[in-house]
Length: 146
Image 1: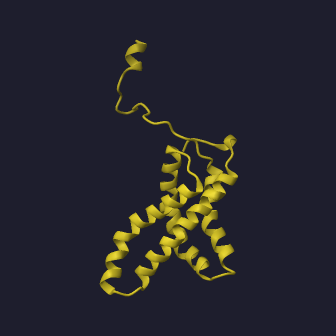
Image 2: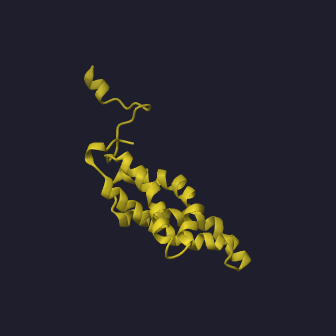
Image 3: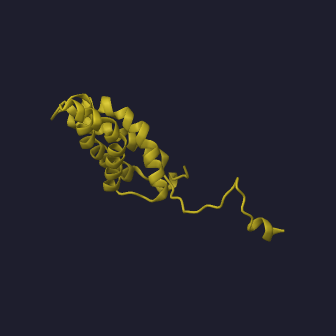
């Protein structure tokens, strides 16, 4: 009987295909929120742009970035450079089809164009800072499957 159940192909409970890596949820949450905030706080004395970018882009970074980073971290651990590259690729793949046509038809660098340009600068910066925070706070004891 055990041979039959061990080799069955159940559609409700398929066999795991790839090994999942464990994610530290506390470090992940602090990294995702702390990346834009830390960049905004440290960049505020030099320029006002990081603070404004945090207000406009921070919620979008969290809404889109949390699921993308969780899926990526479940598949393989990423270095801070990998976080930055994934953040830039996600930003460009999501917002280029939305904002590039509006930017090209108007021909000026107004709202959509500025969002695309500044987002392309801040997405990898926030991703790298978030990756640094995650690697600094990550502990094996707290890692869980997510």
